[in-house]
Amino acid sequence: SLTFTNCGWFLISGDINGYILIWKASEGRLLKILEKHGAKVKVLKMGSNDNILISGSADKTTWVWPMEFFNNLSKAEDYFEKKETQLA
Image 1 (cartoon, rainbow, N blue to C red):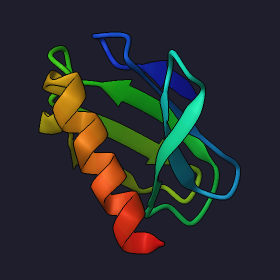
Image 2: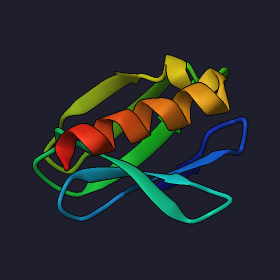
Image 3: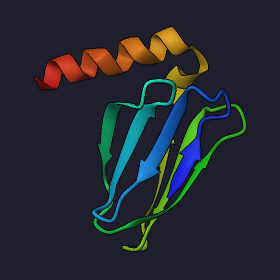
Image 4: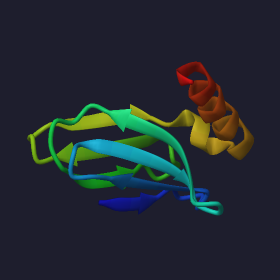
């Protein structure tokens, strides 16, 4: 499953293993991997003002992800880069 944020800055994809990947659309750079589903992500839908992401999976779970940081590109990049640094 694929969706763009309404602002167009981010592409969000779901894979067959249940992961949700958040990409910076203009660069094709992976920013974050969200892990909650136990099977293929079948549905991704952004809220109308990019405030939430809803994901649905073949494991019959639905998650609502707060995405308030998508309202500001620099905040979103800072948020993800900080998380990437903490994981490294």
